[in-house]
Image 1 (cartoon, one colour):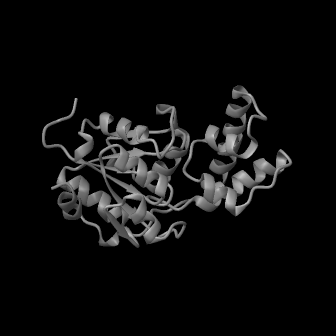
Image 2 (cartoon, rainbow, N blue to C red):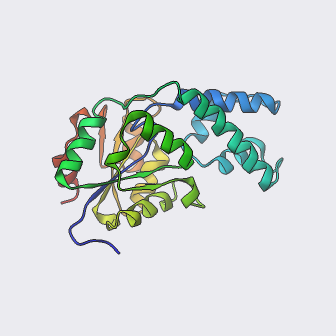
Length: 224
């Protein structure tokens, strides 16, 4: 049940908290090479941010059964986590915003298509776990972005009404998912995968180059 007057920020992970896109790209390249299929930048652009079963279906059609899909997805994530353990850092402006939101009593959650093990690794590596009141991961969902399910689950976990949530995203599908869920959305262009125009056309309420210009007051204003 939503708590009266509660507000929340729901964070996507890759491209907003941290930039590990290249690590994901290399992991997919390795997996696809093992399966005798090239993996291109165009493939990456078309699938980044989606759930692994959807990505593998996009890449291979009906070549693999559901149990094989699960094994292949886990193989890719193990490749990614092995690389990510070398160290990742929060993107510019992220830690000050996390701290400011915490001090203001604005709840924070993760809403990501990534497996929980990946999210745990990032939160531990960046020392940011203590800022988050709930996590919605691929294990919590059956539908990927632009479906709003991952964000609605996150809102439910922190007991905040969707209309009082702001999602931080970097991809059009995530922006569309946030708006479909009845939430406001701030889009960040720092990692450079999508233009300001593309993110605005997807429905972002605010587009910024980095989160250095975003404050707790920015969030409050969006939710007025």
